[in-house]
Amino acid sequence: MAVGATMNATPRQSRYLVTLPPGQAAVFSDGMDFPVLVQVRDGSERELASTAATADARTVVRTRSGSCGSECQARPCTLREMRGGQRLLDDVPLIRLWAELAVLAHLTGWPMPVPVPDALAACPVVASAVSAASPGPARLAQCALAHAVDAAVAVRPSIAGANGPGGAGALAAHVAEAIRCWAEHREWRCSPDEPQWLLGAELPEEVIMGVSRPAVLAAAGTPGAVRGMFIDCQWVLDYLGPAAPGGSGSGGGCAPVRD
Image (cartoon, rainbow, N blue to C red; front, side, top):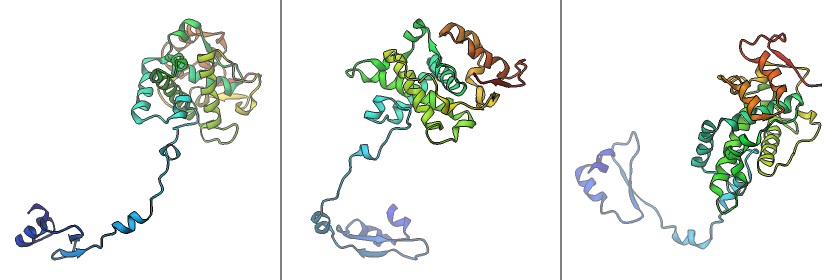
């Protein structure tokens, strides 16, 4: 009766609806006074005559970003796994800080910062090197790193919209790979000179800190964290001082790029 009421059917018509055989139906649309009875030809023979072509889901579902790690390249992450990687960034600030400093290093011509051994050992990115028998931690760590690097690139408008070999996508993929290689195998993937990502003679605050607020590099205690968690990373402090909101550097909110 409830179905019949939605299509303005009489009580007798509503009772008749439940007796319809396969291939028959009552059709109703806005503006019609009463439903109409229709019959659809059985197309089973036509459907069975030809086998529908199916495609591997892996040809449709792809990785989220070029910065994704080997686990995601082999099998794209689910939304649950990606959300887990994002949550890991809040639990382990070192991942996000390392990504920010690595992107800034490439934009300024300095070597990529490397955490001290104790800080690196406590960072879940190291879990990327675990065996294939326990891929859970590796996938989570790689996903977190990819999100951190993509975010560090996206908040810097000077490179976020760029394409090509020196564009945002290429920079994110390179930085993520460089961090993974050092964390997993202590391998250095950066060339001595990488001019394709250098930006001008001076960098404004929006490039050094990014346009998102609160900025990762402007968080309380960041200079101290850089000193204690990264090896030979004094150059970063030259940028954080004048570029930080309210900074007193003589550059008026700009910092010079390394010669």
